[in-house]
Length: 318
Image (cartoon, rainbow, N blue to C red; front, side, top):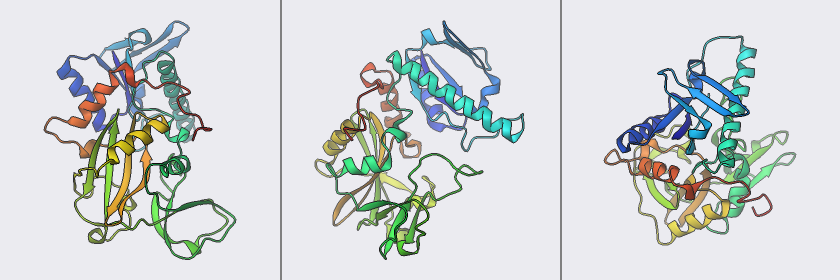
């Protein structure tokens, strides 16, 4: 049985459950934000889940496990307890999810999406390695220094939600870098000389390419992610330039990732790599006529060849 670790607002998880029903594949979905509606127990003999409908699964019955964003970020608030109780409880729940994923990894049934991918392959590591495969705009990170004058993009080093609203600080923003305070740790990147944003959903060796229909000039933006909203502008299929798919495959193999969404900018000067999100969303990009990306994700999830194993890539090799 496929164990799907998710939350109640994840549309991709909805589609995967629907595709499993069409294929006759048994699936059990745990929505972390609805945790009070489930029953769960883990003993020396293994764990068991029961969902609100009475369906159940034990750890011995799990033949594949997919980490589909089991996050409480942006989900409806669950009721009960003081704010302090909630913070402590959510920390316990997230830790328990990581333990379940580690258990699945040890059994060889954790598939495709790596729960710790964003920490193992952070933004600096991925940009360092990317220089072997792509053209990468110059970047710098640090504090205690004055940055050169000029317009640059500021990014967050962390991928974790911060602040009371879980995303209180910078996501990505264009700034005059000489005005940045040296008392703060910054990640800066040159603005790539392209005209149109593009993204590639990489699934187990396959690349699905898309580009924005409107250029950055038409949008009046230096980076579409400034809006921090993936669906606000229309996208279209992007035919990848010669050898780019091969470079993407080699890059992802180098990082030890089976899945990721890679962001680029394209123009007359070529294709520039920006970053890879190791568990990036893609639902709004998929074609409802057959759902090729969702089907590719499910195919890889059910394939032991795309199990997540420890020790594939170390910090030394990055």
